[in-house]
Length: 249
Image (cartoon, rainbow, N blue to C red; front, side):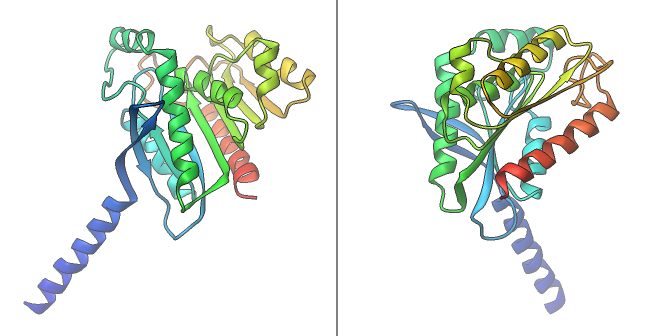
């Protein structure tokens, strides 16, 4: 009987630890608004490097949360921001509707608020905060790089890059880009033009285009059947090495 009680207590402690490792969280966004997201924590005391995680056009779904969990396992405090404020699309029509209805000003405020919240945490090294995003999130990842001068690293998967010289001039963080050779938006030509503009401006950039890979090639749940295992694994390896080099110094 005593053994059963002890096992139950241990199970309860482990369950509590698991719950503490990830949680829904809110933070200040803009003046009086409130943003929210999914926070995944690494083991240990820190201070840790951190990453702002930005959703695809589907919303803050299980796949995005899994990306945050993976970053936490690698030693990062990962905050996946809920840009749709609780809405998650399950079909393309809804995803398109949610994306087009997302106010730019609110999204920018949510991401700035997420960055500020991470920087204020005692278990986060505020000088080692990066950002990663896919699809729509890739665009916002690069946009955050133009507005947050203390960002330490930015990763964009097939996200539309900035094109204005004045925006590129504002980017201080090193940038890693993973793009599909068969993507129509953004196209490989757009990705190459961004890389060239970054290099011309003296910025740190590493763009790789995967031949035969369509849009969203890194998501195994891609509804168009566009997942490309080889490209996805290579892009993940590049991302892991990039964050390690710039956030774990």
